[in-house]
Length: 179
Image 1 (spheres, rainbow, N blue to C red):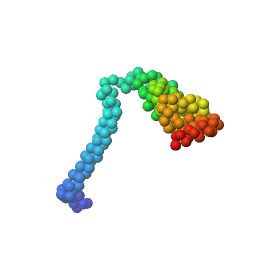
Image 2: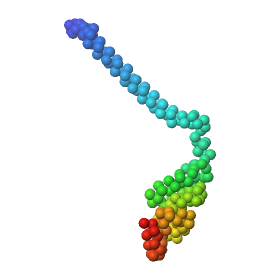
Image 3: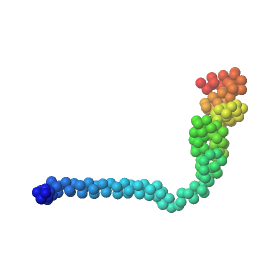
Image 4: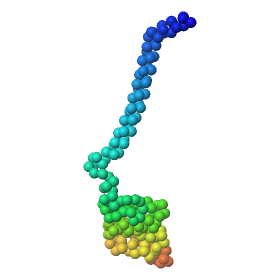
């Protein structure tokens, strides 16, 4: 029994034992550093996401409430700093999803911001075409063509509305004109 104890003490004073012990301590320190680094990263992420209100010197929530943005969906936005491009992008997204009545609402909001835009009027004509409102689509396309007679998207929208109202000859002329 004593022989084993003395050999253990000898090994403990050996150089390899000291080297292994120092490596264990280094690994323990490194693992503690990794934990603290990950905590620092989380803290800096939280601070950077909240730091925008500190940089801007006002609260983001109160700014959003002042702009009139309180939720999602049609009728939520009030007159504010949003421009027509935001409404057009939202309407295009909704048209891709097949929500044509909501898309039409956003296009109407965009037309309130910019009533002479041929892009918005043509997009509204396309939305009316998708909903089956051929006459309303033709009215929007005619409004664009009265300003710019060579606007191709409006020509095709009018041609499609004429085709769906069984005015095939006029539609053919417009399709030929567009090509």
